Image (tube, rainbow, N blue to C red; front, side, top):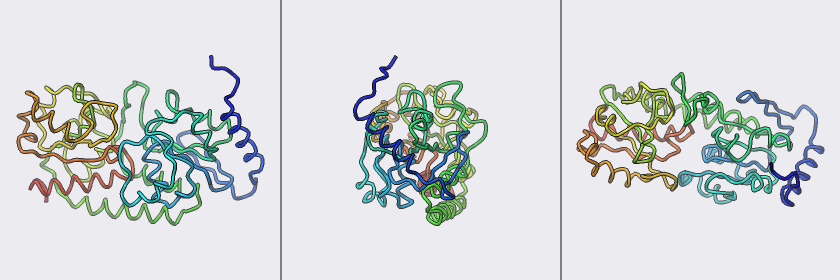
Length: 332
């Protein structure tokens, strides 16, 4: 069992949070949001928010909240270029999961995450651990619908849409009392998705490879790649599995023989074949994959890891795949 004696930095953080909680106004300014079975209640707009995943961080930055952020963590890609200046103002607590104590040392008054694996057992801390210290938490709605009872990256019973991402943007905008900015951001993303939906790739088969060369993580039917595929009227060669990122052998890939391969171009170093260049080198040298139609014709589309997760970057990913398919002469 962990010692009941708190480290000095943790004790200081707890005392500070308790003081803030006792001084918080109990008037009509409080806002309550239902989120993944939890009630998120804030008595005033957060001033020291921590985003535990890049997806949450980029939404906050897109809402113009850099001056109210005490830290970010768990990054797979460089920040969006138009957010770089604001992002530079916010402390990076860790490239991957920070410790619970590291987060508490920032004296947060709000914590948000994209994944239950980050804001849960085995991650930074559970929602209950934060909330016991008076820190409200928020989990991306797109992850709430993910069934993780079977282990792995979970599975979905229904194909994801952009609606949970729009809900996340609106919820965070309401929590920070910047609703107008939230509506503007959602409207912009919706318009871009409507434009992308004009691409007709109905005769094109796609495969999405996130990471790992020995036992590759390939997209199932219904996550962020499912949004892209459905929007472009294309077909995912693994649309018969509801697992979010099943590990599938290369012989099965060869049997499905996709027209185009969408590659995660990651900057992290936790798996093999993280970068798109490493993935391409593998595909073109492996005896099972080098004769795939997509490989022979070099039909690769490079996306950030964030685009392949349900975030606002899914819109960027949809646009990039659409442009590539048109460039290959496979879509109108």
